[in-house]
Each structure stands twice: as C-alpha cells, then as structure tokens.
Image (cartoon, rainbow, N blue to C red; front, top):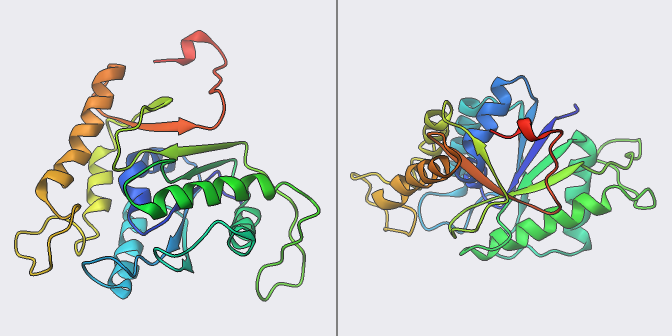
Length: 240
C-alpha cells in the first residue's frame, strides 16, 4: 500500500501530541496517512504496553489513518545503528510515502531526539539502491524509495517552527485522539503516580500552544513543524 504521508513516533501518543490535527486534516482532504510507532512505550510510569496498544488502536481510528504499526524497539534503549535503520528503511520502502513526519529534533525525552535522527537517516538511506531489504516472509527484494520531504513536529520543548499548519477545524479531533490514551493523561480519578504529562496543565498546554501558533499566523489554531531544508512555495499567494 502506498501512503501519501507516513508519521513516525518514538512512543504511542507522540504522533497525536505533535501532529494529531495535521494528520486529521490531511485524512479529511483524502490523503492516505499511516503511523509507525517505534516502541510500545513499555517504560512509561503509568499503564502498560498492552494498554498502550489498545489506546493506540483507538486513537488511530479517531484520526482515520489507514494503517498503524509498531516496530517494538526497546523503549529508552533503541539506538540509531544499522540494525534499527534497516528496519525503518523496510517500513519506508513498504509504504513509499511522499512525506514523512517524525519526532522533534530536540526534546526532553531522550527517545524523541534519537527517534528523530534515526528516521531522518533511514529516509536518506532508503533511497540508496545498493542497500538490500526484504520484509519478513516476503520473497521479493524491496525497491529503493526516498520521501520528498521529512518534517519534524514539535513536542515538549518550544522549538521555533519553520512553518505552521492551520488546523482550526481539526483541533477537537486531535484532543479526542490524545485522550484515547486515558492511562497517560489527566484523570482526576486515576490512582496511578503523577508524571510530567499527567497533569491538567500539560493537557491544557496542547490546546494553548496550538492557539498561540494559530494567533501568530492569523488563525485560531496551528501546529508547528521544523524542516530539514528550505520550504518552497509555488507563489506568494500560496501563503495564508
């Protein structure tokens, strides 16, 4: 299956937090979008890997993505080496996306920056024909494929975006997808330990960051991204 956009996240819920409204908007426009989680988030303080699996499936349904897979890399301990790069290359060549979205280039959680660089490197390597890959159980070797663009969503840290997507009509979908991870986020009745993302302030911050980015571009809500190369527009009136 060929996808228009493939979104990578180090953990289940990264894609929703960083780009959930953009994903929903692209799906609504008719784009085929998929999500690949690198780990099951098994080291998370709250919940469990099994719970996160169910929550990720529910969030994927809310966003309307056509596929969601989990690489089952070791949470906290995966590295950007040949073994992991080849596995990510297999996914890129399997889905042949035009655009890849992935973790923030710098962030509080060490997996975010690691995942960002791992996916970015794999996107480049995936275009080299002398790297041979074959999906497990498949007989044919995969063809090289390099996405046209790699963009990084913004997470815990307030990084300066290179561009902002207007998402005013889709912020409610994003919030619903985030709250599908009920084990992770604010719940006044939860008996789980508190974490940096389980407070009401964190959940509220997702909304007020989007509102602030929207304010800065003259709309109600926005999601920011950083780019690996200059962002081009066809004409001046392509900008809003």
